[in-house]
Length: 319
Length: 319
Image (cartoon, rainbow over the protein chains, first blue to last red):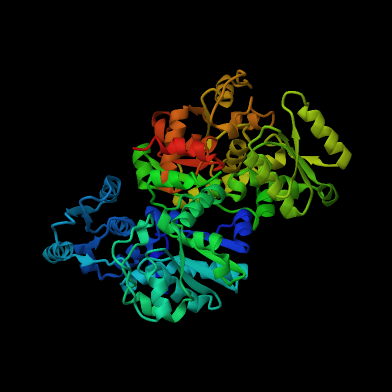
């Protein structure tokens, strides 16, 4: 499925390179290879999954359009993929979402339907709109074609890692619901099986780490907060977790301070804008070398959609 | 010479893609294709010229080492190219250069010799060191092999533009001494001759624009200041200007406010960190659409080595 998704994405997705910096190698104490999905269309890997899912629909179903629940990267990825397929797209967003995200999603051709978090039943609202218009729901991670699309990131990593002769390397993946992690793990199990995928989460939202340790799904306690808004999902997916359990090493987690410092290093050494949730893997590489076993580490930067004020906070950690 | 340089750079330089954003297209009123040389090794295109010049030396000369005068991107480009060739490198820098730039240049393996701007004769100091150790001077732009190296950027642009079917497009190039502009102009004259190169400079340092208008070299009046530190050269080069005069359209210039807004758009829409001097071409595309004639515009982002405080200033222009 991942190879088939890659064929459908060919010419539409932006293949991203593996970037390096001798300065990052020195901090990490091993070679660091960075996969900058912040440079992907819409600023995150989510465009891959959105394109994969929409392109896999049968033409009649696709023509009726798609719907997604998201105020973030998934919304923009699905919106642009639908626009480029020339099909309708409805995005259900909370009315208090940042104006810029609402405007961006609309600018990518989607119809945005706002709901009130306090009084509206989001799922019921979405289901009613979907049924009325015959729209297909594109889930953010627990969907085989979405996982296959994110997995194309893993095919690119495997291809480049094999060309570089990397065999004993950890692939650190920013992890929310596990779509990107499970997709990369499946791709690399087939194409670069000596590499080991490790999920990375922010402290307080380390449900995947604890679930991997327990061998069964654990949820996050409610009420936690994190600057890593892109990856603060309540629990691993029903489809993604069994894949992660079978294929990944122990999960990692990082602090907010480590995330901000990683964002600053990406600015300084890679000239890349990374959002907090997209910087957790680099943070683990730079701040938790003792928890990594590979000679080298491959790090996903999963997105770059960060508010200027948060980015300025990260810059303020530099001397 | 550019094709020969490309062969020597192959596998050592980082080929950069052409990036796009529908949001930038809308601001510019035409399709915008961005060439992100801020992602090049050392954070600017200067690594290309440094590698080209060093790799072109005969082995015995190269083994004695190289020397360059620079406190900026040329220093880091030459230092890394020399380090990867395994040859000595001396960089002559003013003692009041930013500590980070001195530290970075040393970390890339160069010996940094500091001079006092007020009391030392930089050229005499460099000449003495070079003669004593048999070092070869690598000039920042007025050197055929440096121009050939920067021109490899143009070969990549021409290849991608031809694949995209771009014929009536302006290539906007951030211009200091003219090494990158003349190299790209030569490459595209051969490989994509319907494209037109336009130099872009900051106001107050528009010597190339005025020289092109006059048909002969004009210098900048002394005493001007600009945040675009990477491209504030006093006059066009003796080698580069005749090439620019023969091949380029009229020069463009932009204000500091336009530069800061372009840096903010690169952050927001491309997730790239661009330095002021590296953002002048994007600034022209976004703020001076009436001075551009092509259906599309190809914009170089020539570097990303910017101080955090200056970058924060650019972010503060966002709503």
